[in-house]
Image (cartoon, rainbow, N blue to C red):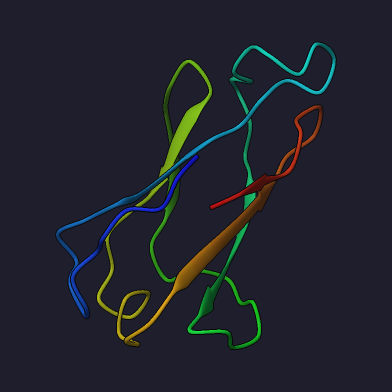
Length: 89
C-alpha cells in the first residue's frame, strides 16, 4: 500500500490498512483483531489512540484521532494478526 497525506492533529481521517491471508498471500484476511502500532516522525512505535475496526474484505481502519496525527512528519503503521502477513504503511 502506498502512502497518503493526512492533516496534522486531525480526527477527520482514519488510517486504512489491508491485512493479507498468510496462506496464499493474495486474499484479504477477515475476522482479525489486529495489533496495530504507530510511529510518529521516526519515534518509537506505540499503540494508537484511535480504535481498530474491520471494514470488509481484509480492510481495517484505525479511527481518526488527533493524538495519533499530532506530530508533523511521516506516520508509519505496523499491523499484525493471526494467520495474516504483517502490514506496514
